[in-house]
Length: 204
Ligand SMILES: N[C@@H](CCC(=O)N[C@@H](CS)C(=O)NCC(=O)O)C(=O)O
Image (tube, rainbow, N blue to C red; front, side, top):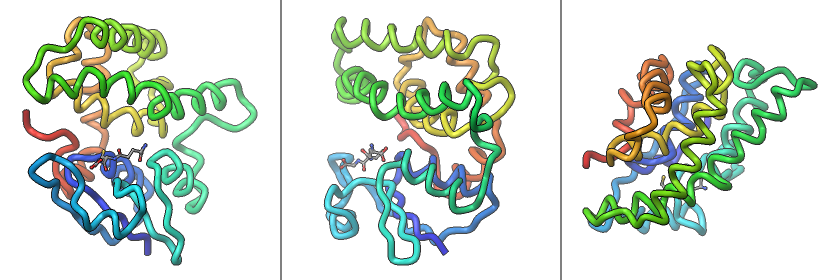
């Protein structure tokens, strides 16, 4: 069985959500955040970067939430969380899925770090965030999800970041994204994962 090293209020919920959807159990090892809201030292003994999520499967250690999600759909032969291969939608999905950690997360961090510290978000960070939220709004189109009514890995991947933005009141002015986030919270896998491991975002 897969072991999931799950830091509280973290991207580990993405992994739990997918496992819930796939009806696959895991052994979850929980880690509390320290007083500076960082991962505890114990996670550095699991993986050199000391971050979560990390999974272990048959002695193999896998980090990076996007890689873990790809690994799990390959392992369990799941085809339902991405558009069919050989279609344009498949590659649009790959791009959106990678976009979340490769591009969006960094822009979001510039805005949420000051917000978490109770400081004003610098105008430059606000503007960059707005540009990305406009982009995602465009990708949502009619919605309700990024690929219509099909829940994909890209929705699961983006959920954690939307949770942080919503908690910090940074989704204002983007009603379609606020609606999208509401739809994500209604997904059975999200409900089961957060029931089991607690909310994605910390209370503000
Ligand atoms: N790109 C990585 C990011 C991993 C990451 O930064 N995880 C955060 C939690 S969401 C973490 O472990 N933070 C604790 C720390 O940096 O001390 C992924 O997608 O898995």
